[in-house]
Image (cartoon, rainbow, N blue to C red; front, side, top):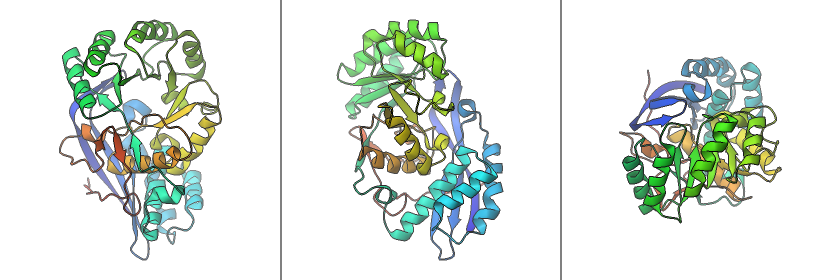
Length: 348
């Protein structure tokens, strides 16, 4: 297969403030694989170093290490074997995700069917998603939340652990009313005592879910036992044994952490075996990554409950015409062959 690798930078319309730092832009790697018949598949590696500790350079090295194997492959027909070969060379999940997405895209294009239909018999047609509030101040957060509610979002997500959490959440709740779910994400900003105290102070506004209040399974268990709010893990889900531990009410899964669609579906099955809920989110992925997550979510929604997913993130980028917009709080799963989107590519 022909192997091509390029870079693309997405600028955020306004900075995203989190407990691990402020994100103003996100650079991703786009992988294009073309077989001997000219069928192309596109994948994406989207590490977010302040969040996951993986640099773009590290992801690029892994993908370059895969190049000889992939260039020598005849094309789709051995997705599992190719992924296993790449994993043996370098088991970096975010790089494996790019290969996995490209191979699924290529398979769907060859079959003339969307990836979701290759994953299951009756995929969901749309995926419910949350809106993300990025403003740090009360008035800005309230304005963004009110706009999300008017647009039909059933859940809004607010970053916490960054100062004035109670004030911003009170303003958001007043703006959206009682019917909209309010999800908070601390990105592990707190210690166990801090998390218990913070959640206790925030619970009066009504919390749909508290994501990653602390890092570490044992810490999550201690927090969950001490609060009434439902607790989810995100970063902690990468800890060995975390997916099947049953330590949280819900688990956030990401393509980049699971190694692509194939790994994500396997991870979801492990989580669901504990009766915990699953949902998918983006790490500020580009259109390819979000499309891949939507196809995976469509398959998961056909087999069990799926919480609102954090996939309405392309709207956060400036100068990008969102190919996967949310309508009435949900994103339609692409129906074209493969991942179902066309992407422009920008090189170094």
